[in-house]
Image: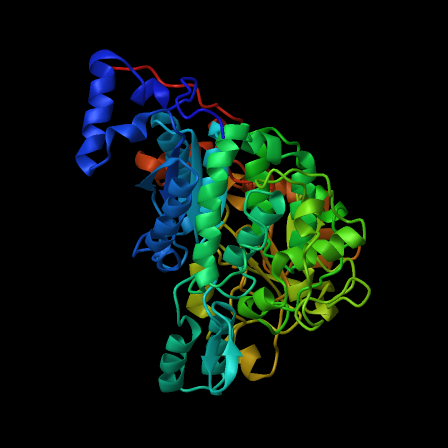
Length: 578
């Protein structure tokens, strides 16, 4: 290890300062009981924690932070934990996605404003992981991600149940009379039975795996359950590693390369990951200046099979995935098929190939081999184009019904998800199994925040008739725990005048996923006439954060980041006011 008394550390602009300024910085820190020796030039490590009782997936991160601290002390650093906001998907209204960019801003500015040489990022729920990565990338100080881990498998009447995924299933059972209110209430407590995030391959699990695939999280750490002692071992190891990264000068810009993003995109396909990874990876790439086009998410995965049999695409859960070998086993399979960049550098200081060399796959049920995959190549996320989505839309093929991937049907249009829910249980609703349900004004600007509302439940009368899936199209998002033939992220969104705003009841909609098209079968002259009649929605917000969001948010194909947050602003030491 280098001489601790080095004077070129960023933190020494505070703790190594002379005169009144240095006295102010050191003396107030010492009210916590720190001895003078901790200001001797050793690396100062921030531990950014999104622990919050308002974000159930993140409540245990305070304990995880203690494990990180142990590692930092062991490696000779000074750990300083600080809170960030938490964007908990389960409670926040109108949607946690509205606040992802705000959290990213907060993380970025907290890191830059304080005497930190490196940072460990503690996240859990869906938006906390990308928000922290985005903020840290824009500062570009050494950083390691530690996700909080999934919950233990849910258990109901002797069967595994998955958080999120079974919410949709139980709702359908309730509507069709297969489950009573009392049974449903009991089942609620069976889904989330420990600390941690969703144990399905929802967005939280997906983004934990994506962070590991990007090289920003220690190998194997995405899958350990939140309550497993090895989750704390992982956190302690991250605390040790971040001190070494400061010594080595290893930064996010060294790790988050084009090759790393290609790895993450292919891994997301192999694990049957959430469509939300598209929007988060696109936003993160914008922070580090990596060109990532929506089409990359289609082209890069065409040769990648789905290897992981997890809900919502399959039947197993994250606890099973962990014991089967976790993400290193998946990445080893992909490396064997020359589907990953093995030379990409990671937070370990080693390459992807070096990290996965000791990986083992235990059994072939949860993580299937490349030559006998759970689903064949080409079943990952598909990117659609057409006159209904000129800037693109996405669909998760592994969670869709194969017979609906090529479909033509009449549109039934709703101007908001609420408008649909008001009539969804109407026995006289004018829909059948061929109808294409169109939900609009749920995009980044229109809702605002682009909520997870696209996979609306089927009309009650069709559920009772035995219909299990329908084509649904929306400019919003879908929970990673959801399933069905749902076209998402339609861009441009309806609220800014995208073609979705022009659809009318009865218009023929043609979905052709094999050929990657989504088309409204209405002639151009009629669409032009409708556009002349269209008026933008009235601005709802005159001030505050939501106004800022609606004025500056980019469209889904650009990651829904703010226009003014793209790029890195670096970690130069701010001016000293003392």
